Image (cartoon, rainbow, N blue to C red; front, side, top):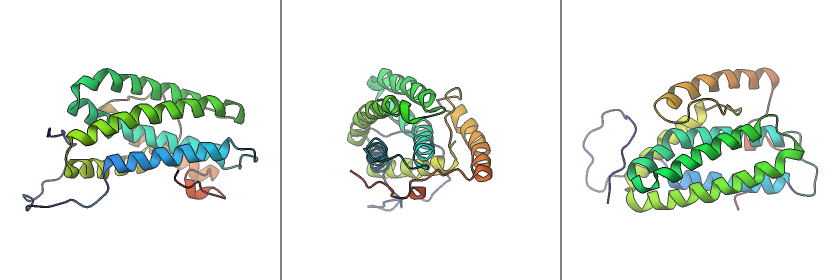
Length: 203
């Protein structure tokens, strides 16, 4: 089983046999977030009126999700699965197009965004399946820990012009995220699923 190059981590003592780090697998996190995004899109595209918080929450959730994937998931796939390099590049290009579609998101543009999100879920979901097959559970968990940290620091607004690959995205994205969060606080903009009147359930 191939080892996945991990992001820089603090020194740790040699693990004992059977050691399992705390946290969730990056594959499980991404799968769950994909289900949540699809459920939110179903909710916003339904016959009822879109809640006032719906579009900003979708924009923020997608912005965080794509940023974290580009910082840790896609680089891990590229390193562990060299044959998937072109598919990773295609996903990065698709992410930029999706972020552009999110700028100034309106109800009228929701159909296009929903279609782009579904293509993202299919494409990245397939890469996650392949990563599971070559990475150890410890590697997936340690990457998951890094993904969650990156997501909390990530932008909450679409910035398709920022770097999309390491190391620069790991430097620029948190800085942009600080500015976004200040604007969110000043404008009281909702950015989390829990801010919705009825948060969507996983599919």
